[in-house]
Amino acid sequence: MKEYLPIDFLPLLVQIGAAVGFVAMTIVATHYLGPRLKSKRKEDPFECGIESVGDARTPISVRYFLIAILFVLFDVEIIFMYPWAVNFKKLGWFGFGEMILFVGFLMAGFYYIVKKGVLDWEKE
Image 1 (cartoon, helix red, strand yellow):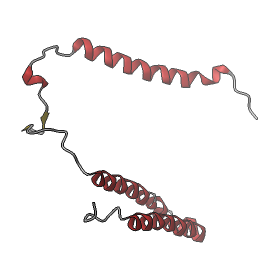
Image 2 (tube, one colour; image 1 turned 90 degrees about the vertical axis):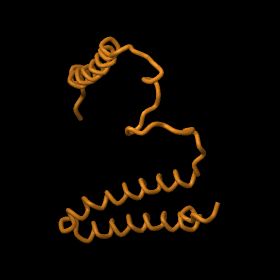
Image 3 (tube, rainbow, N blue to C red; image 1 turned 45 degrees about the horizontal axis):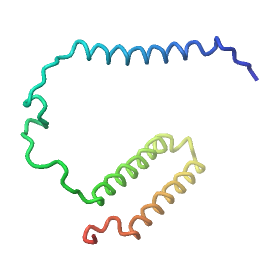
Image 4 (spheres, helix red, strand yellow; image 1 turned 180 degrees about the horizontal axis):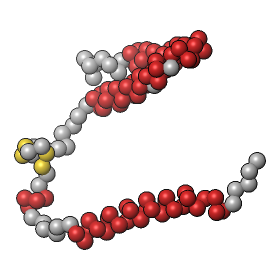
């Protein structure tokens, strides 16, 4: 087992220092170089060229956010299938079994979501 000396971590410390320095320099530069004009028109919210109308704090159903989170969750799980498909022949039966297990867990989660009624829009 190799024993690490403090000098072995020098490249890591230089990279961390460069990253922190860049962030600090960017914050300071934008503070001093940026415009300082403040007006009512400049402080108004602006989105895609459309004037803001109404209150942004209208209540939105929690179900909407739950569906969005579930979409992201299942989308990311589907992304894991791409490397498997690319290496399908090399992985052989072991890889196939692992994917069957993965899809089984995915479907168990989906079954749980359906049984809980999360996807039932009519129910409130």
